[in-house]
Image (cartoon, rainbow, N blue to C red; front, side, top):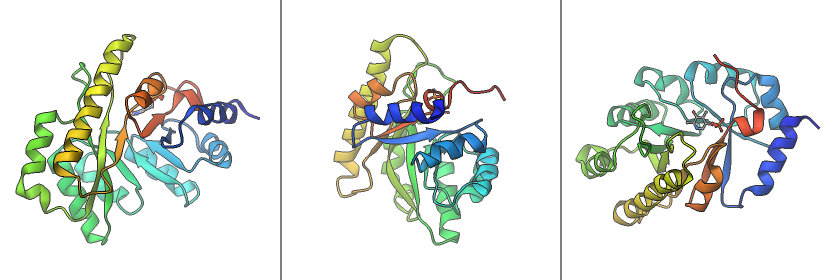
Length: 224
Ligand SMILES: *Cc1c(COP(=O)(O)O)cnc(C)c1O
């Protein structure tokens, strides 16, 4: 068995049944992705549209592709035909564009709203306040072709476990507040995408339902 397959098998044993694994395959060649696919994994995450489109063409049609990286509005139309979920909706303009492109194809796209929880200012996302303002706006309610499935967040890149836990906890609490106040009727609003290779255990303890894991499965990424 290859190290990749052994890595993912080991990881699967640690994930509770209610937590879904998004295998983050960015920068990894299709051969490696196929190994993971053949071990039973169907859900994969990519962060760049160009790379995603190239891989989508070459790989089996029953893969569920998740976009996890920042998405430019002019690229939305390329992924709407096949994308399973967009984790990185970080502006109203982007949500609006996804809705419009999805409507053209008579589709509904699963979206997560990305929240900025980290201390670094390099990471994309809404503040808690911006989310509330957006949800309360009339224009938000008119979006029939996006399915708001929950929230996504990335913790600060730090070794301070207390801080990471604190950031995940704040996202989890905010998720519950939104669920109760605005989405109590929505069965779709149920996903909390948080946790990567280094912090997924903490994320799961704080309520994650979707972990996005790359290097722990595939090994260290090549620099591109
Ligand atoms: C790369 C990436 C991941 C996976 O990171 P690893 O540390 O390799 O597990 C998760 N989420 C996002 C948004 C990423 O860009």
